Amino acid sequence: MDFSFSDDQRLLRETVARFVADRYGFEDRTRMMAMPGGRDPAIWSEMAELGLLGLPFAEADGGFGGGGTETMILMEEFGRGLVVEPYLSAIVLAGALLQDAATAEQRAARVERIVTGDLRLAVAFAEPRGPRYTVDARETVAVGDRLTGEKIAVLGGDQAQELIVSARTSEGSTALFFVDPAATGVSIRGEAGYDGSRVATVTLHDVAAERIPGDGAAHLSRAIEAANAALCAEAVGAMAAALDLTTEYLKTRKQFGVPIAAFQALQHRAVDMLMQLELARSMAILAAASLDRPAAERTANIAAAKAHIARASRFVGQQAVQLHGGIGITAEYKVGHIFKRLTAIETLFGDADHHIDALTDLGGLAA
Image 1 (cartoon, rainbow, N blue to C red):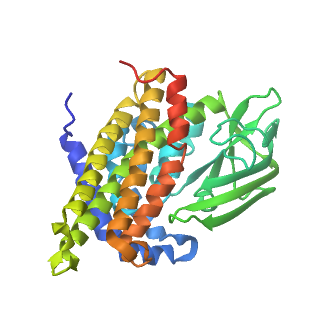
Image 2 (cartoon, rainbow, N blue to C red; image 1 turned 45 degrees about the horizontal axis):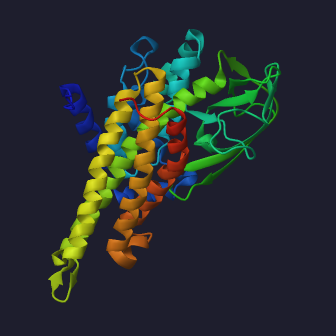
Image 3 (cartoon, rainbow, N blue to C red; image 1 turned 120 degrees about the horizontal axis):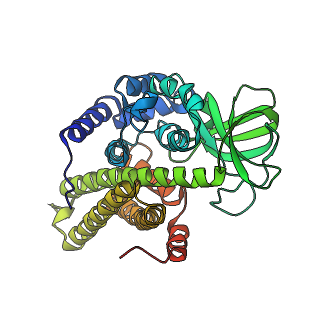
């Protein structure tokens, strides 16, 4: 199988890598996170100018028609730079819902504004009680087109101009709705996550909403698969950055008059990190390549990829911190922040155990 990139894909990687290097150094990231809302609004505008916000949307809707491979390339570079902008939630997750579930009229009213950076979406589906990782709405209810309930851990929810909210209908099914955050009856409380992301609790009381047709739970499951494929790529980028920092530290840190990289035990640990990184890279490619496959194959492959990468993320993150010693957990040094993001990726949209259970239920990977 040919895993080489096309000229356009190589150009995309170069563009994103240059953007991250020029605008998202660790000091820049620290400065932006100290700003109101933990973000620099100019960064999102620059992403729009580079065409990154339109990457996954169909050309017919005003996007650039990128697929899973293009998203993988972008997210890997974002992982290297620890980019905290809500690209995953506002573009990948919400974008997948728009592409798969929204009507042509609903897309026409939104996609071009998303591409230009004038509209940012957030997806609200998690609830404070009930099974972990479920996509079924239980406590948020829809009476006609009016919603009442509470959503938690809404990624980028306090920065969104529109929400996509799941709710249980009178028939007992899960449906999706567009909600204006400024509408009467909506309350949003945002806070910073430990990894630099922004999350919000959204409370709804008899709020007017616009329904998105179709099976909301099925659409959410499909969108979360796209988000997990993107997370796999982001984790690969973050692990690569952690390994680069660790090997450089081992070469420069001296003990007993020699660089600690001379000690065979530490060499072996660095090699173990590299092995886990390369295995994870292969699984991220599998996840991205599976997005256009038949449903059962897609679901199984992405579950396998996320399960493997969740465990690889923990291993590489922990090794990076341990091999750095005390400096590895200081706020002024990047490797500790990489570890935090890898820890978040490990559990976001399903941890390893969740995805192994899902893979078992599906009968494992196809031969």
